[in-house]
Length: 454
Image 1 (cartoon, rainbow, N blue to C red):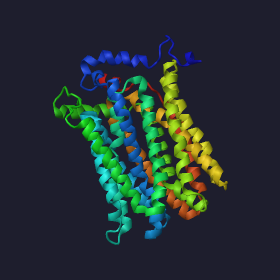
Image 2: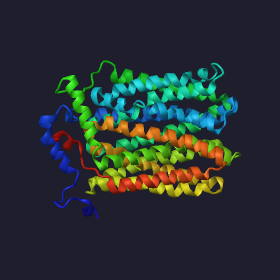
Image 3: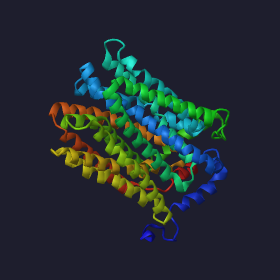
């Protein structure tokens, strides 16, 4: 069966760009990720758990507001529209620094950018309760805090994409992305589990304090053990600064002439929008539809199921590629699971179902969505490894805008219709649209090399 997805000469279609890259390297060494910059195995084994924990804490910090929004709404007398504004504020800030973070990481190395991001969001998270009780305009202050949190966290994933593209071997990128995806799910899981316990016993303020302190401790460990006194390679420039900036801009813009790039971007932003919608509104959905249900059940099970699913998806993707299946076929298959299968489990929630069925459907949908880490999310490293950080930043920026619109629109739809059905229909429609475009136009052949030649 694998032979059906291999090029006619018997070689994997992904092997050709490697030969082309070698041929072009003499003239474009300044723009290509350098093989000598790849992590040694011992160094990679150290960074892997550190990045896993960092991604986990990133989502813990991001989830503090969604976990606490019901209690905060009761305290400050917010309605659904006001809660949606506070929740959606994060994505406005998140969209502002995506390209900047990716470009900076492509130039100076993702390690430094990740450290700056974590240190900053730790401070903002820990200081949020004090800000909430400062003055009478609580909604405006909380929205501003969420915007600032988004600004600081916006550089994280583009930096991570740049770091993996520059340091990770080709055959391990899917699994590394899956590890980061499972770290995200674990962060949501811990925020739901420990956040629920802290919320019940010590109030919503304690959730922000705990996550802020843990994030600060992680940043301190990274500095002391990995970055202090060490010099990580920067990308060399073969031109002067003005010429280099002009070439980089022209090169990046040329990539947007490729239909496969736009298909990848669209699939990613659709997945981001629906994921953010579920992430933001799921606690409120269960609280209102099943008021007597145990909080930790619906805050834990969906994310606990997504953790091993993401790891299995990464392992499966790399295994299929190593067996000779084309990278494009594998990416599209994983994205079909992420968007198509998840929609099949979201739609039953548009009608009245029992609490166990609702938990099963949400859990199955999150399991399927985790496969996007082996689909459109990693596709940027297939198509444009030399500009992975900046292009992933652009993708995440659009994904953040989609998240703002869908989270805010969902709050409005719930308030007006007094029903959750329209939200689940919206999620399924967005999934189906993005999936159809990605399946038709998506590819995995490198396109940044043709931009170099042109």
